[in-house]
Amino acid sequence: MNPWKWMNIRRVTLRWSMPIFALLTIATIPISAYASATEQMKTFVKKVKTACGPFEQRQVKVGENGEIKVLSISSGVFEFSRLGRFTWRYLKPYEQVLQADGEMLYIYDKDLNQVTQRKLDTSLEAVPMFIFLGKNDIEQNFTLKNIGTRDGVDWVRLMPKAQDTQFQHLGLGFKNGNLSSVEVYDVFGNITLLMFGKMQKNLTFPAGHFKFIIPKGVDVIQG
Image (cartoon, rainbow, N blue to C red; front, side):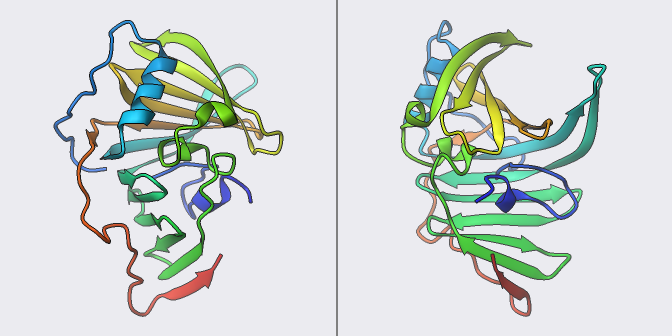
């Protein structure tokens, strides 16, 4: 399965992205000011079981002269809960919802009046962002390397150990123990940038919160 395919958006070109609300008060996870990006990531993955917040996503291309061209910009809100449950809701420029209940993934395109559903593949090899949705076994699937600080954000690079992925590597940016940014570099030379606003973490979602209700009258496609 193409690791980006299930996240492709009809009008917003992306290779992979995942799934925020108005800025929320943050309950900061205690973490040393001297912790490396790798240490911050491990603490984040270990301690954050649920979260929600706003995001902005940009698809960019780097030209031969090093010029960065922005191909698309989108934004929305997300919620997630381990294992494999999330809502990733695009609000601008077009509305679209990606929702997973731990077993099935649903992609609802309001303008097309259709829902695509398929079995959810929660393997870390298939969907890199599931490092935040799956088990705490990142180092079994990725080689980690601290790559320094940029604009006050500490970065760690994740190189996939599998040879058949559609991405070259991931960059995860952490600030004061909180996930700030994600950069996804695919094998086609595209870069997907995710920038997160303040997250509310370890909140309690009610039972059935991530169950997707198929709207009446929509076309349902088995993906």
